[in-house]
Image 1 (cartoon, helix red, strand yellow):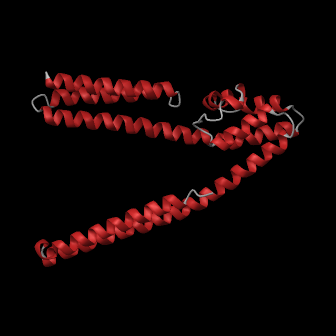
Image 2 (cartoon, helix red, strand yellow):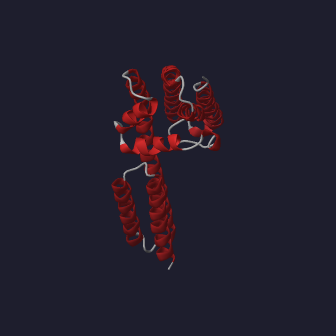
Image 3 (cartoon, helix red, strand yellow):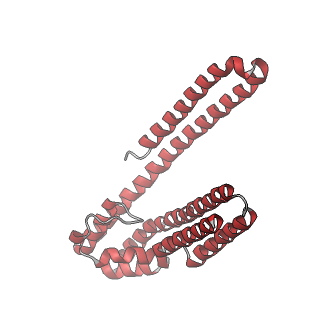
Length: 244
């Protein structure tokens, strides 16, 4: 009965998680279905393989449930990053269409039609609402400032080209800054990894030579200091990398 209850919980949680990610409409429905099917199959195999060990069965099912959520979240984040990369292209085409003589809205619709369907589904509602009614709305692809700029451009027809070019320039500068900042952060990660390997190498060298009992206190203290230094480096790098 315990195994049966654990299995039902695992199956329900995987199906519920898959449904939530399917409702987001950011991951392909086929991908979500295949992922859910694979994890449900794994849960059933675990239930049959560990039918006499409820503790191990519960642990493995919980691990599968967590892996299912993490995998779908990773796939969704990758899809969001892909869609975000289309936004500068959308602005470039919008600007180009206006320079070719099209009106602002006609140029926007033509630029939007040339991009992927998921991107269109996420961007089109922005131009169908009153900016004053959605100031506090959060968008999965755009920052609040980008969202406000687009809604302002949609509401006010004058100086559209100038505002689009300003927005595109700001995005270009932000991307350049983040790229440079990401390079600096990557260097910090490399330094932290090197420090960690040095600490591990020293421990592996000293333990057989002097014995864990003799150097246990020293090794514990040095490890704690190393971890504290690594965490501090990563936190400081993360904190300073996005200050624009």
